[in-house]
Length: 409
Length: 100
Image (cartoon, rainbow over all chains, first blue to last red; front, top):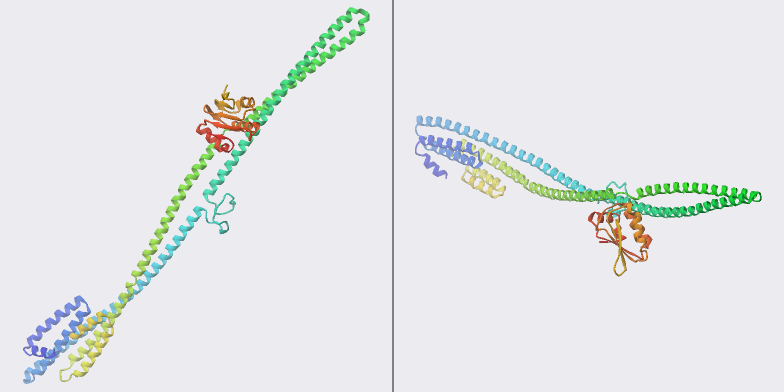
């Protein structure tokens, strides 16, 4: 490759200028792309140019004037090479620094993202637990395990997890008890009314007996009257008998009065009994509508509660499913975050390659500073080999590609 | 008469028809209806024309049952309207009487 460039450079110094423009174009390309490969290509161009320079100085050594001109243009060229070299070095340093910044940014953000996903996962778990708790509470199953999670009818009040269903059942039981009581009261009241009716019958019988007594009294009165008449007819002899007859008549009237009084009291009793009968009747006669309404209201309530329960259960089920999905998404996101490691590794490789490139440029600038006679080719080869070793250490296929690029150099 | 009693042709059963309101106003009529046939072993309470019943009717039915002897006699409540059937069910009469 070196001999080929020597032949090329033998023609004219104008070629130098052409090459200079080519170099500038290449540099511009490198600037715009900012890629390492481009940088390497530029570096190789530089080396090619430097080689041209060396051979140029070697072929023109005869005429003094030409020599001075040539030396002067060589100095210019050397300073241009140095400038380019410095510029390339500056860009390399910038790329290195940018690369480090990029690595830092990626690393920091990956860490942040990782933390965010972990906390998201925890929150999703927490949400899931809450949903389960609501579910259990709605079902009223969150009792102590001794009861086997079963809320029977014997559940005691004071349990802080009374289910709505249990509440409704209890209410239904209370209404059942109330209805039983109502029926029992009615049964006994009707029974009492029957007994009262019996009493009324007895009192009526008493009235007919009292009628008999009245009859006896009336007959006694009549009899006493007859006796008094007969006594008067007997004259003096019947005087004593007349007194007895009067006395009997008085007694029969007293008896009649008493009879009337008893009848009056018995009538009062009958009135009182009929009042009691009415009251007992009121007690017995209760409208069943309230109990009916209460029962149907509870049925309705239970039905609604079951619907609400079902809806809540559904919602909680969906929530659990959603939480699972969130967790899955978070997991795959966390897996996705591994790209961060890959990016970091790539950054590391880039950094090492930049170092190698820097070394290559150092070597190149050294080589450019010397003429072919002064240059120790063996030493240059040795350093080139060590550069090859550096790149092959990176090991990856990409490193091998980079190695091929360096081969051009 | 809101209460009417008929004995079946074979004389084995008695049907008591209750018209209108089955409440305290018929307490004596109803009592007389079954006490008049206390030797019978099978009674039907026909409610096809019963418009309303209150708790005293329940009390009357229970008194009838205990008067006739709950084990010895069969009492069937027939032709109930849905409303009356509901009342009987709430009072758990479906466990004490045959209801249809």
